[in-house]
Picture (tube, rainbow, N blue to C red):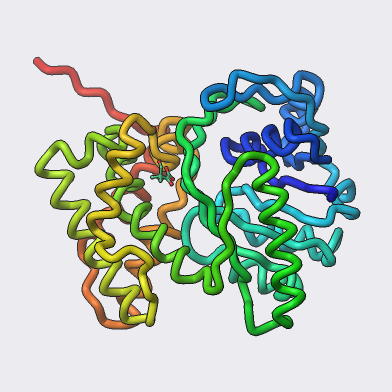
Length: 318
Ligand code: KPL
């Protein structure tokens, strides 16, 4: 199969690198010409698990080069999903589109522009840290689950063919992947993890594991996740973990040395995905009249942090 990966961030580079290393045909789409040229010439460097290795992958800013792709992996930040969907609408509507992005709302954005029968959703708990253009550290291994984004839009046979092709592609690259019938429950289950960890690490600059070592962050994490559980249950979400809060704490332990993706964004003074994580709980909570004070505060603080990147006051003790 001919694979397109959109977004040369930590996950995009990791996936493109490992897919290419396993002998599959991959092309990586970037939107920054200079960076694309650099990585196209120098290749991808992947450290950490199974690394370090360097692998040549074609990188382009020309979306047309994905017009023949059979499958496209969407690895941009959640706030860029719409522009990617609009681009692919012009370039290639036939490809299967797989999103493994963080947050809620990505499948919906893709489904607004692309044939819904082609949209697959998924979650992955592989940890990847961006070290520089084309340079990432594979920080932690985890499971990957995929499922149809819109199971009602196509026949069972078509769905299982698409899912099986995506699973084989990922498995061949060493990302052990399982197929599930309803991906929404998984996306919301992963959302709980990001609700508990991401904003708090971005605000405190702690690593994931430290959040449960301090009573202050531990109780904020617990309250944020409990609000999200209430909002999700009200929407009919069936969380895949028996004890979702215990699972979030387990992920803190399992990824204890990780710098969460939101803290990575803040350290690089980039926009974060808070609107698609804690912001979703805040908004869905307001719609359903479920109070979400903790997620509201977390969202507003992270938005303030983003808005004040260039205005950091440094106070010196007298
Ligand atoms: O998904 C993650 C992220 O950083 O976005 C976790 C699971 C919290 C790992 O760091």
